[in-house]
Image (cartoon, rainbow, N blue to C red; front, side, top):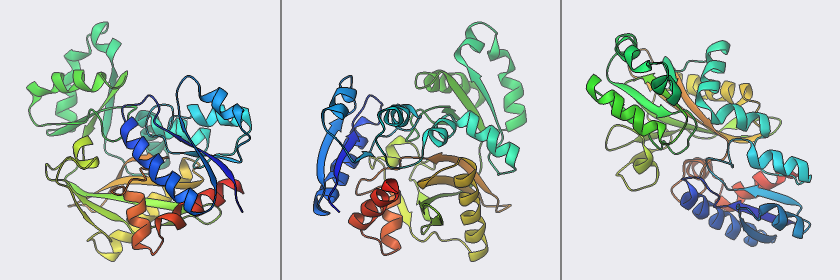
Length: 312
């Protein structure tokens, strides 16, 4: 049935350009499906623009700040406009990696060991003096990342202790808090999940970045990243990865869709959860559409499924 759909894209985050690409591709698919489509940039006029027409649905094609932290979802709840993807709770808890990792620990879901610090702990509490203890406990190399940021922006692999301070300062440029995480030598995997009542894991994608770390350049196509689908792992490991992804999806109360990023330890074969994404990329090189395609779901069918789930 024909619907009036607002595709929310762009926004103020550092992932704006990726969001625009996702939004354009989604808009094209929606038009092919016969819907009336309005592409709305999420700026200071978004409330007026959403009120200007009677929209049946808002398709969230935003990534990062405002789009995956619960902000736009809460606004749409107030306006009474149905929207795609997980709700406010899932976005709030998944966007801050410190909060989600604490939840994973509480529920027994494997996630790399970590510590977190914020800017004021360095400027006011002398946190730099405990960095040697953190290195001693986590070992080297370790991973430094912003606590609330998408597309692996600001992530650094620190191999020498003297490089740690600069990595932290860089990460604090993206977020008020920073995570220092134990490095896991493993296989990078992305498990995309779709479905409302009975969510299912799509074929798992194995990611092989050329620099050994799936950072912003690797994710956005400016690096030479290899993808293998389905992932080249034994069936036993695959089952464990899929079960873990579903556990994360449910723990964060996701609905309709998510993408769980996992690293499978090469030695102990434990699937360590890195994060969950509530609004995965939908470009022609994005992981969710890639997984759907392997499952025999075309891009238009994927978008149609997401729309129908949101309208239930």
